[in-house]
Amino acid sequence: MSVQKIKARIIVAANTDRGTHVWCQAFEQALPGARLIPWNEADEDSRADYALVWKPPGALFRRETRLKAVFNLGAGVDGLLSLPDLPVGLPVVRLEDAGMTEQMVEYVVHGLLRVSREFAAYETQQRALAWKPLRPVEREQWPVGVMGLGAIGLSVAQAIARLGYPVAGWARSHRDIAGISVFAGLAQLPAFLARTRVLVNVLPLTGDTENILNRQNLERLRAPAYLINVARGSHLVEQDLLDLLDSGHMQGALLDVFRVEPLPADHPFWRHEKVTVTPHIAAITLREHTVEQIVNKIHSLEQGLPVSGLVSRDHGY
Image (tube, rainbow, N blue to C red; front, top):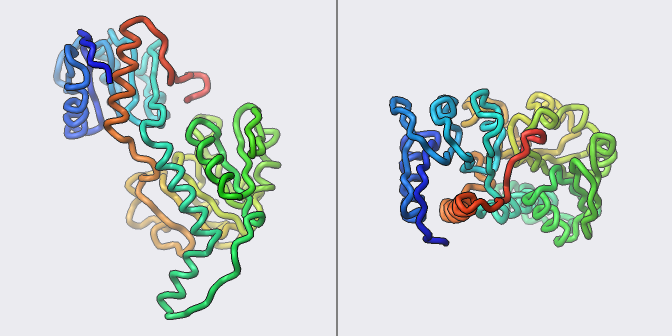
């Protein structure tokens, strides 16, 4: 990691006072010469050059009017972009990987293998003291479809392909990817879903993708279908999934993200026998990787150099 000194002022707002304090500490040693300023609503304008944020208050952008760029301390930028006070011309920089890709691959592969290899059935048999080998998996019976072919989605699709499962991806535009059938745009979404039994959602949340996991689209999947959602809770119409689980069209679901988090105690997902719930842990931001990536980008910006990871406001990611 670079240790070149910079004189920038950097304001940090990381959802909670404790979170903000932890992130300030993490960046202090990595940015010698910089001043790390924890967000405090009662303070005056700190004249900050950069903002490091996770679920920041809109007041930050009303007060800090000299920002050169804002760095999001997580992969998803939908919450940040939805803030009405975020200045139109302010560059927003998202995290690229930061240790999350490998975690996401592990999570999805675990979910796929657990359903296709029937490990849940073996767990049930163990409780019943039953020794009963089940039929070996036939991978061609478990075609996987990955929605979203960004850096993480592409790695997920490639890992599944290496395991021998038929894999297709769906993205905004077409490209050629060895070993993966690519479908592009809304016109090819029905065909993509029709060839898919295990649907993996890694899409960014935008106005175009909100509620995309609805009854109409889920009914197009090959039955009995299975859903793995590791993107955003607002992609999924929850009641539609519950109805299709109860009808038998959906075999099950592995859900890591929800419209309301933490998931309320009275939510039916908790107790549904066909749903596995995890608490938004599919890919957790790794602090050391995040610090290194953002520090290097701040150094580049200070030198007038371009940086990767700039968010397109038009596309929402």
